[in-house]
Amino acid sequence: MNGIYEQSFNRNLGNLTNSDQRQLKESSIAFAGTGGVGGTALINIARMGVGEVKIADPQTFAYSDINRQQGATVKSVDRKKVEVLTEQVRGINPAIKVTAYDNGLSEANVKEFLSGASIVIDGLDFFCMSIRKRLFDQARILGIHVLSSPIFGFGTSLAVFSPTGPTFEDCFGPIPDLLDINYTINYGRSFFPKLPKYIDIAAYFEAMKENRPIPSITTSTALSGAVTAAEAVFILLHKRNPVCFPLVRHFDLYEASIHIEDSRKKTPGLFKKLALKLLFNIRKPKNISGELLEQLL
Image 1 (cartoon, one colour):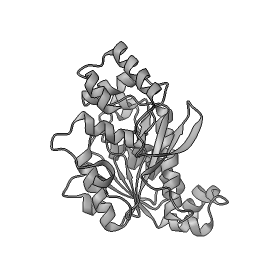
Image 2 (tube, rainbow, N blue to C red):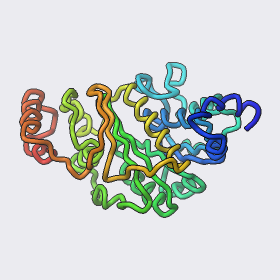
Image 3 (cartoon, helix red, strand yellow):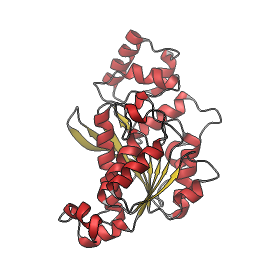
Image 4 (tube, rainbow, N blue to C red):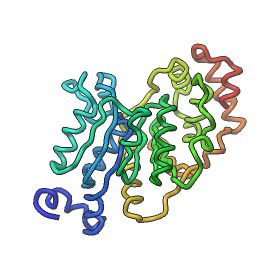
């Protein structure tokens, strides 16, 4: 290490070795989505001194992103997310190589996007299931891990998908031709088998049913970005064996808890069922029947 790079990242040493830092400098990480989750992990990875990143996101910043997304300010509204974040990571490390896909991921470019990457961070929007499956399938072919860390309430769950572990369909089942709320909620519940007691679950159900963004907050994206970046570094440097899906690690700031959950155990206890039904009857989310709620539980 020398010059600006050495001065910028030498305080990593002690937690990392010189050899670790050199390896990070030579590593490439792909970020599928650069919103609250992907963008925060991206900035953390840049500050770790990783030498190359690939970023894919077709969206521009909106005012509604300001509460939680890296790069989202009043001045960046209507600018491409990958453009703003490219400027930010180059401001952190002028030598970093950035390849930006400002039209996002597609069937046509996912293979190229993952080519040469050591690991991939899944920061795709919740409902982007088809391209997510394509991403997972291609990562499996290339033998690289996929990290997903969606947020919920004041928490996040970290899932590590091994290239030698279950396939996407093994984990979540076939994607229906017409994506419905049953599939998307069951997908989400794989990351959060236990629902936080403190959230307004009806507000989440309403958002998912109407195919609009679900509630989210900055402390959760910060937590997600931290655990995702750390896990990516541990895998890249072979620091320890990762805890892989179907096991997920759940972190919750409100409940001050960290624990490992089995994603296959998605059925809450009788008391929680009754509590959720009571909440449903009070709020009556739009277009969600009691029968559907029973299926989701």
